Image (tube, rainbow, N blue to C red):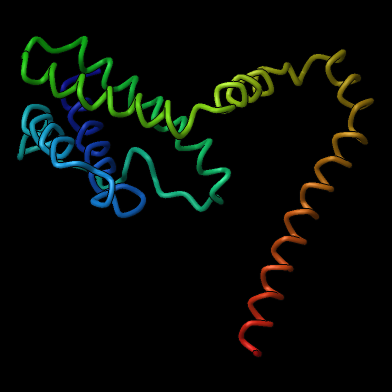
Length: 175
């Protein structure tokens, strides 16, 4: 990865990390902001042009989905910071990267790691299924009705919860 690409990616991720998908100022410590600012100074030059597209675009998922997504996003950040650590010799930058990477690991450990690694492994296994294999196709066909029933049950369960919430809101507005 060339320096410009790295800088663009760093700028986008630093912007996302400091601005966040929500009000990051509520959770980002002064020490974290200071370390991010040091990294910005090191990795981003003022004459670089950016296309305005974030590395991690905003999502429209629900909270349960967002937790899985956020866990993966944090993994990507850890990977990015690990690459940056391997590519620098500047001691101040190394310390800042280690600090930020440690904070990411703490956040994951305390709020995101319950069953998400297991879920991620399960998803990777699903994505690795050889859909062109005739044996897989036959097995999938024989399992389809069961899977379809489970999916339908989940979809209706979610739909019913939404209807209950809407009914409760309507009831509270009437009274």
